[in-house]
Amino acid sequence: MRVLIDMNRCESYGQCVYAAGAVFAFRGRESLEYDRVPPGHTWADVRRAASACPVGAIRLGEAPEDGVCR
Ligand code: SF4
Image 1 (tube, rainbow, N blue to C red):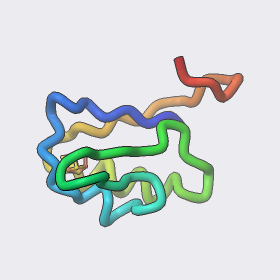
Image 2 (image 1 turned 180 degrees about the vertical axis):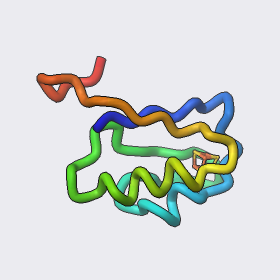
Image 3 (image 1 turned 135 degrees about the vertical axis):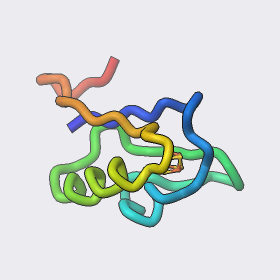
Image 4 (image 1 turned 45 degrees about the vertical axis):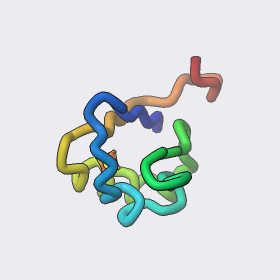
């Protein structure tokens, strides 16, 4: 799984942090950080986070075969 957040849409509501705290976290008040290729055991939570995002900013896709995001 590969995760991409459209930061032009993100309003820092934090629903993703509540749903998948192992993958999404705030640094400071509004700076969202996240694991772009999260481990398999977090995928259910990441899908919940994507569903919970009120502005639909979280996009999920396939991870590249070599595991390296470009
Ligand atoms: S739930 Fe959506 S809007 Fe809220 S911080 Fe996460 S990505 Fe941004």
